[in-house]
Image (cartoon, rainbow, N blue to C red; front, side):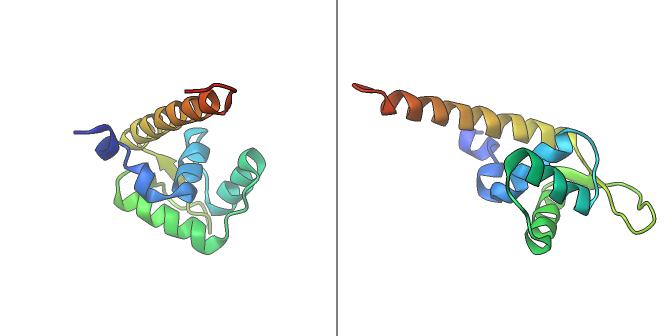
Length: 108
């Protein structure tokens, strides 16, 4: 399996990555996810974007729903989700390092 094939999140989109990062900190329901992402990333996910990302991530087996607590429907990251997030973040770090190097005077 190539690195690109392992980086399933590359195709899932930014909202999906933000949701996984939030869930890596512990299970959350929709409103808590929106608030957490806004706090750590400065990005306000709309309900349609959030629930689209949750649907994609659940279908990929990267998150799973937990039993509902009254009207709240929490989710948690799965082991495959944590592994996919690690692969994706490692890829972003490599790209970021290359970009920073190339921005330096005389960069490669």
